[in-house]
Amino acid sequence: MIGLFDSGLGGLSVARAVRAVLPRHDLIYLADSAYCPYGPLATAQVRERALFCARWLVAHGAAVIVVACNTASSAALDVLRTTLEVPVVGMEPGIKPAVAATRTGKVAVLATSGTLQGDRFGRLVEQFAHGVTVRTVACPAMVDLVEAGLLRGDDAEAVVRGYVAPLLADGVDTFVLGCTHFPPLAPVIATVAPEATLIDTGPAVAAQTARVVAKLELAPGSGRVQAFTTGDPALIRPALWRVWGETIDVAQALQGTIT
Image (cartoon, rainbow, N blue to C red; front, side, top):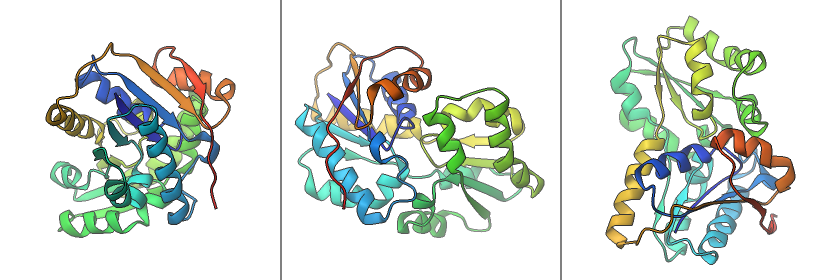
């Protein structure tokens, strides 16, 4: 079984990509909704939550962990890999493909403050963004849209336009979806910026997950998808179904503690 976690519902975009390449493998998804969003939390707090979520997934049968959250990957990927006895696949914003794609030499990374302030992100920019201007924009209101299941409509477009329009006016032509909450909003972003290139690293993470699964010789299952939340299942269930695109089981997971 493949385990995935995120602060909330954004990681479902990664789960969807994993399911596309590994349709027969069982997935277990944990939304740490009681502590969503991770962006404003201190790095140590994000690391604590990531360890809790990953250990919970392992305890419930996950043989591979996918950190379906850029903020958690930035804060905790190294410690997860040294602590857990199962392989861990993480996320990082797609700076390299964005630099290759831009025609104007201006790229924008839409993410959370936790991702943008992390050392891992700084190293990516330093390594790959030679000769390219990289604008960074924390977009908490876009996270809120997805957590509410508002993936289309005038309100969603207004929020997205507020972030994207100034960047377009500045010549940005390539947008990195640096938070897993943002791929579900890609159709709205494309409406606001129809000529722009959108970079989503979910498929690349799914491909890496498939390589890890093959190396482990992990046997397929029935293709079952289970979802759990540290929040109230009744509250998040409608939004989760809209983000996932179909109805699936959503159950309660114990929250653990945070200091």
